[in-house]
Image (cartoon, rainbow, N blue to C red; front, top):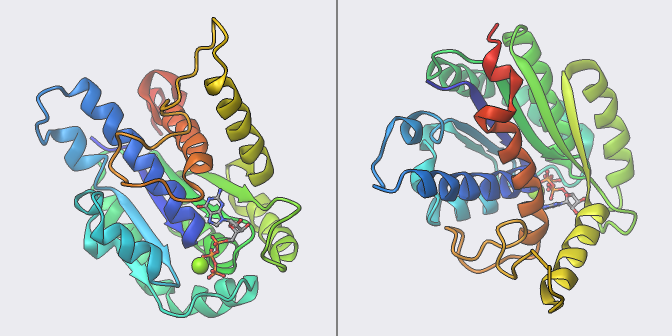
Length: 258
Ligand SMILES: Nc1nc2c(ncn2[C@@H]2O[C@H](COP(=O)(O)OP(=O)(O)OP(=O)(O)O)[C@@H](O)[C@H]2O)c(=O)[nH]1
Ligand SMILES: [Mg+2]
């Protein structure tokens, strides 16, 4: 009984997505004490489409502890990336991979008994995330007009090292306004600020300080992902946000199917 399909596009989309799956599995393991491969694992967890026009991040996922979570037929990669260029992601790769993307989305949808929503995760600053990500979004609208499209968009900070990120963001934003049902905008500088605040709180020995140093809010410790990588703490915040949205009691979408 699966209700949603997660679509991860670009480096950021895949890295955030993997933190989400890591946390979701840990949450699931907490409830599923017997550790059995149950229905929730086989349906919800194996239902993601991973797209990146570089190989690195997806390859790393396939070699890491999360490899079992993904169906290898649901991955799509190229080698050279979009060079931080919205137009390359949207126009060049968007048309070159159109059929393959539609095919993978359809297969993912076929696994669902009652498909209610797509969760797209992407960056607004990278060429693949902003360009191909929004191309996938318009494909979703074309192919599944009645299924809700919820997009988590990671916005660049003012100090972003991708020089074209403001342009990519503006171009992608127009697509979001036209094709998304709901956008959850997340700004990287805000994530940095939250992570720093939590670190200060967790290191202060003040009585009443409730955030533990290895809290899942910012830490992957004890999870499946191995040693922490640069964006992990920031991505954990976003993963928590997604986890809260997809948890059954909180999500009204679950209760009112189309
Ligand atoms: N929060 C967060 N931001 C990220 C992460 N990876 C990259 N970014 C941000 O995303 C933007 C760059 O986009 P990427 O996702 O790396 O690019 P891409 O979609 O792979 O596109 P190309 O590399 O151009 O093909 C910059 O604003 C980065 O700061 C991540 O794991 N987490
Ligand atoms: Mg990339």
